[in-house]
Image 1: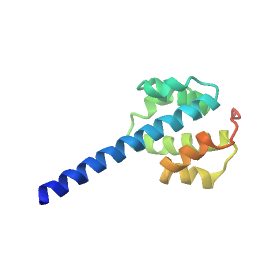
Image 2: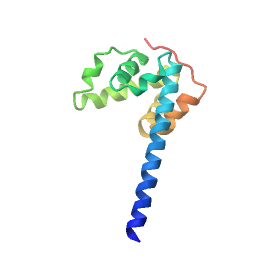
Image 3: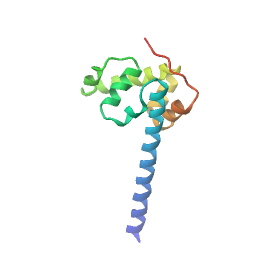
Image 4: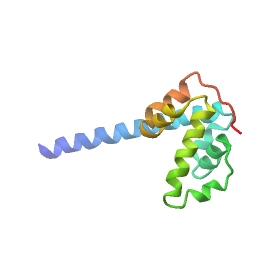
Length: 119
């Protein structure tokens, strides 16, 4: 009986995890498309980061800086904040993207936000 309960808990967890991943892919696809980039780029490892850096108007070599511990944490916060600013939002939306990304990415992707390239 106990094993059956654990089995169903695992199955439910896996299904919810896959659904959340699919939702995140769809939201990021929409965000990339709004920014004038190819949406399919989200599916290609490493290239998706290069395109993401292009969206927030940062050079491609920042990808190399993401390999450095602690620096990558700080840079990711900067990049997420620039993404928020690119769509006309402020620090509050940035905090939402950091702590509740699965909700705020959907809001950004499916909301009425327009992309404006930053300097």
